[in-house]
Length: 172
Image (cartoon, rainbow, N blue to C red):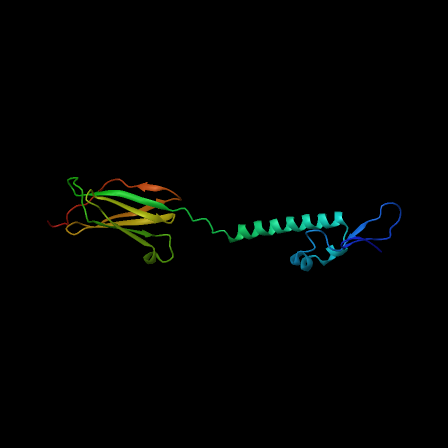
């Protein structure tokens, strides 16, 4: 082997196409990471060296893409809501009424209750409800409990209930 210059050697080959061996390729072989990852780069030809570097870049980009894809947060499930108005028997707004929604599709419905209280205009809103079937109970002192046995909530849907008219307890 003859030395051609700093770190370059010429190998004996057949014909005119003698290949040059890269012992220390200009920028790449000096990198400690590449020495560990691909020690064979020291004895590769320039074209082989470039090809291997391109393959390593490609694999690195694929690895980064896969890492980003699997480390991303899962998408939030879509939720729905139920809204409505509570009134007395004459149609006046009832404020302070307790509204409770219980998921009847749940294995443990008592753990899947959502509550709200009506405002001055008698309006309530139950938000962040998982899709499913709910029973609604409206309670207020001085009135009979009002129950809606089944309300279906779907992904991203806001269910608007018809006006709920509360009546006084029986016997008054």
